[in-house]
Image (tube, rainbow over all chains, first blue to last red):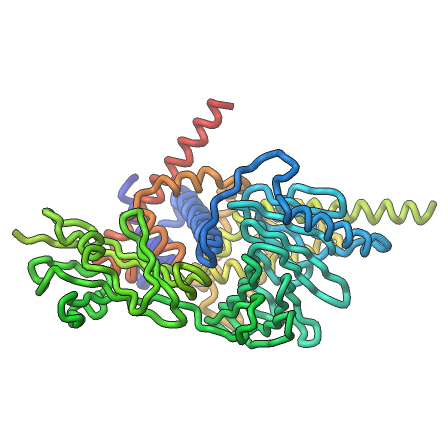
Length: 384
Length: 186
């Protein structure tokens, strides 16, 4: 690449960060007068957009919300979707009968698909593709690693149907109901009239949405509602217990009679190093500054524990360890001396990179809702 | 008979609208790139594209039939941006007519191809090593600015920018290699 193109890319990166000085701005604008640079500009924005999109999809995969499940092997056998398909087909027939007397209403348009999600429409099964209009009564069915995004008709509300899900659009002029039979949906709902909220119904709970960002998942006979923005009222169907779930919280409705409550989403925000013999934290590493080089010779001891700094309701923390993982379910979730030596590479003979990764879960042994994975990287410096 | 012809006309309109919506969906990524190019804000671009799609649907249902769909969509997006700019002067980063015209020209001359199949990109991302993936994660998932990435990685902003540039180059080459391999196989 020429130095002119290199310089253009350098300025482009700062342009994306809105960090150009006046002189750099003038330089960037003048470079854009060159057709080759304009071509490069379009190429860069295109790849950036794709990468941001991929990042969004990766973020929305169930791994951040629930434990990963083994991917189902695609097969052409009639049992492909198993019992959930049988259930959805029955439901589809019922809906078809309910709606057959009048033409079904267009409720949404498919905007993005990953993989080959299917639409069950009456007795017919259609392959979903961008641009397809979804009708009231349609059931969206996704398999492992598939995703379907749609946008409501005449409303900027966006719904993502994540992998291994079955979602029915039961929408009429009187009600706007999304029935999540299994799996996960994530939605960004534009403000709705107070008297006409969107209802998300699962086998054991119901949520009233008037405008918010949230995710609902149905798994192992329980419904988890996570709210990223705004608030959602959740009702447990078996006893009509209700709870307001606000930004940064989640609630679980299950068959148990435990009180229905909103809980802060678990989060790990940093790590500290603790002297394993005294139990006291090392002041210079409380917390470990992001990206810091750890000089082995400067450490008072190599018998160290790693202590996560966490908030919200944490039932367990999973640490990544060179491709393997360990899950600790007992507070304060300190990683062992051996763990620290391995992860931080304290026994290394030469300088090395370290990466500490931890994912908090609301329940023990990596169960319940997963918070975001916290990663800390840096160098281990070995002085001889 | 009259009813039947009315219904026929209505079906034709529906099919036209459906065609425009399908074509619009193909233009979604290029349009998103265009909005991003002006706003430098992925979230805002994501919000605006929803508004654009509502307007496209409304206009198509009202009988508008664009000759040049990509340019028509960019026009809708540009008008929306200019309208919103009245309330938010920082919406478009370089808030000048000259710059908007320059970006328009860039997209007019180099219309990005719709990307219906991104499996190659995904496969190429899967092949990336740990540090490249971390960089990708920081820049695109966490949407960190160069200076924040530099602070986290204990490197200079320039070093991070160079790494990002190399990363994008290697992804482009990987995608091209896969494209050529598929063409030869086909």
